[in-house]
Image 1 (cartoon, rainbow, N blue to C red):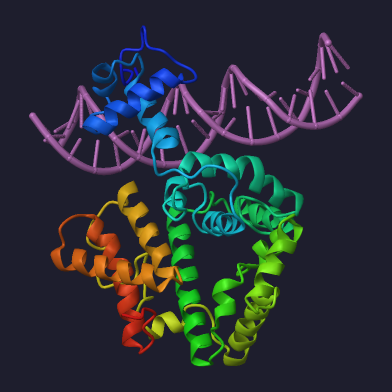
Image 2 (image 1 turned 90 degrees about the horizontal axis):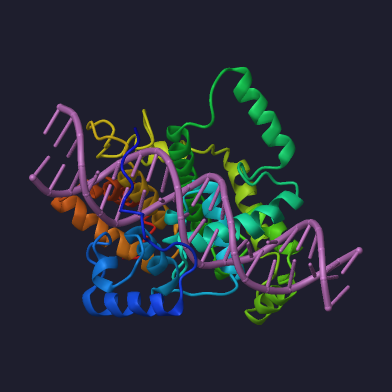
Length: 330
DNA sequence: AAGCTACGCAACCGCCGCTCC
DNA sequence: TGGAGCGGCGGTTGCGTAGCT
């Protein structure tokens, strides 16, 4: 037997919400807060399931929600984070202020996914379709299943570290310029997507007004590739030097490794880890500073399980700082 | 104008992990 | 330690509507 339904469904209304219901819900939450969602409908005089109320509030009625068309910047963020995280909509949503996970999920399914497919890019792997098919073939032939979670976390970690290393190199060379941060075209896939999109001309105009070349993203990528080649630096080489990549698991080499310490890989710690990792990757100095301070505080206190994830991000920072390459301008 | 189809999005459903007892 | 209750997440559904014939 499955578990009992979350609430007594008999007599409860389903389907679209009426303005009156919305009004009741908003009025109640504004006055009392939502408290227990289960108890809320009765207190607010609604014939709805608590879950339904929570969803309606979170996805539609909350005052801090931005509706309407997604900007090019938001599209870029979604695609990049999806490439990194997959369908973790709630985590992706934390990086798009005022957008809900449901909205992002819908936008991905109805717009972005299709556009990628039209371009011959597999929306799951974010690689050209031919490559994805080969990869699937290889995986099934050796009996392995889909990418494991561990591999995904490792991939995310490597991505973050390689980006940090590249940024450091560019900075050292004096090549890390505003164009890299402002060009809005930092990934190859996104560049191609953007060049297909209707808004591209206006974006180019915008870049022009900032005195930037619209191909800035490509130029930066070429520079980093060239630099990597000339130095013959493989991904991870820098990480080893920075003591943040040794052996074993997605948290390998970090001073506090939740896996080594017997922590379960539960959803919360993963989500926190990914969220903090993304922030560590975020080129925003402001965000990084907040992250650093928050992580430091949590690490010092070791208050709760989330500190494990925070510790990871904190140690990413420390590793780079130890190499004299502090990413954050503290 | 009517019928059909495709699309977008709000809402639902089932599952999972956390907390509390 | 295990079960119940709860909130939250991601996948899916289905309704409303725009566009086409």
